[in-house]
Image 1 (cartoon, rainbow, N blue to C red):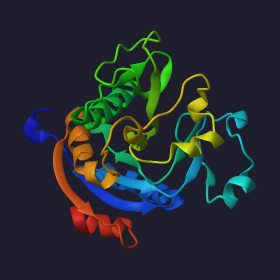
Image 2: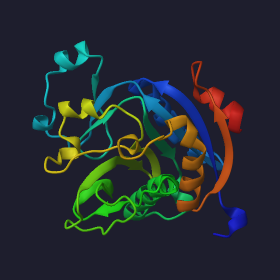
Image 3: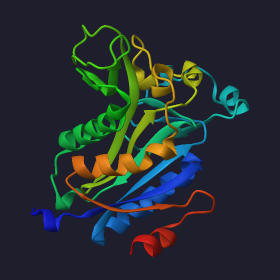
Image 4: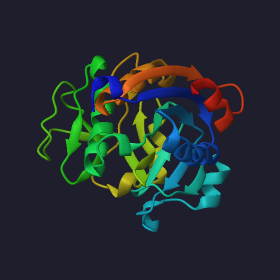
Amino acid sequence: MQASERRELHALWLGTRPYAEVYDLQVELMEYVKTADHDVVLLLEHEPCITLGRGAHAENLLAPVDFLAARGISVVNTNRGGDVTLHAPGQLVAYPIVNLNHGHKDVRRYVKALTAAMGDILEPFGLVSGELPGKVGLWVDTANLGQWTGTESTGFPAKIAAIGVRISRWITMHGFALNLVNDLGLFQWIVPCGIRELPVTSLGSLIDGAPNPRAVAPAAQLALAQRLNLTVGRFAEISDKPVSLAAITALFG
């Protein structure tokens, strides 16, 4: 595919939203990008929630649903891959709705592109990150933020982001959740992605002056476009009013 033929990746910042609302929007967008000449990434923060992927194990949810609800944390079953994940304000969530029929129909390559894009977002803040063999997500060495060996002998590895996707007829949904300035204390109620032996971390717990999700949203669009071989499209914001497929088509055509 020549550069001139690359699809655009438009980005929409949604602010802080409940999980179910954005899930429904993703499903609509999957149909939309089948015939659109561009792709869309939703960038947002979620209200506190725990999501259970298709591979979720009940024992990785460490508190009753009623107990969590009383603390403002919803529990939602979803159709992404993976185990148990937590979302909360201060975490950058990205949902690329991309038509891979126009690119590389390769699930592993797509997941690696998301992982690399998150690394690109963190790099300007002095963090070198990467994959850990046999474990999903994005990892950093909390003992040496400027280096990542990519092995289990890494000094003090910690997970800084989760990835969970669904691909249907080569249209993608779901995506990643990158811990920026979210409350890590909420992770006490789950075993994140079923990984008991290693901790989670956030950019804000590792450096001073970590940005909020809105501040890095344009960088996320750029990183995703580059890693997915797409052209950077428009960036729009609908954070203070209801969002719909009709509103998105009005913005991006």
